[in-house]
Length: 296
Image 1 (cartoon, rainbow, N blue to C red):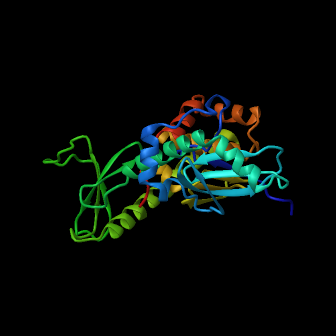
Image 2: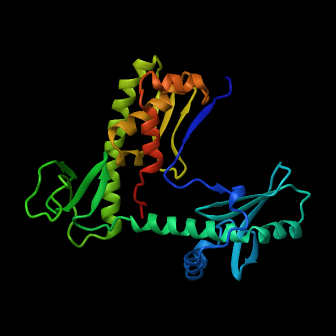
Image 3: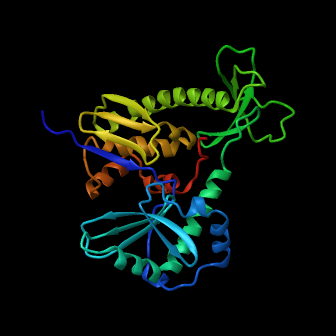
């Protein structure tokens, strides 16, 4: 049996790691950025895979160093912190000299990454009665109701709500004393059930239009992928797509189904996507720029 090929659609909500632009070299760090990082160095400076440390402008930076097939020293600053890639023949002394030369840029970018992380965590859902959860591009209000055996969804606007814009409600069979974890898990179970139903429906809708056949759908909770497609027709979609409006979900579905015809991202592939979703660029942008709350 031939080798199976697989294509993946990246998870675009988190900011992409940023390489150092030439115009930023030597630029002094922002005062507020340094203050932020001084208060939060344990988060902002410590890469989870750190294997080296260095002091830059009086601040401790634990970074991830790895060898790479390249001719120069590369520096990336992402949500995890600083990553350095260098050829095997480049020694530690030379690497640290390069880091100190670009210390201002590194500190500033670490500050921006730390603030982005803070902003993202600030969106975290407080799991309690009345909490709002994004669902199909709108808000879903949670209602704890111990009289119910199963979760129940309704679109009726309940009177007495402070936020009258939340017209969708998910009634969970939980008491007011339910823990945050219980509320979160019950909500996730319902959302995943809805995701499977909707994704299956959209796959069945678009597959004939693209003249392809999908064989199996599985849901993922990946932090880095919205979806993948295998040459044998297996489709894997991130259940958290259910937070986005239907047009964005349709784009991801079409993207993965299009890979069953073209297993790359060539112009032919994008022409295939555009044949079914002409405004795919707008939906792709929304997938990249619209944030969803961390699932904590």
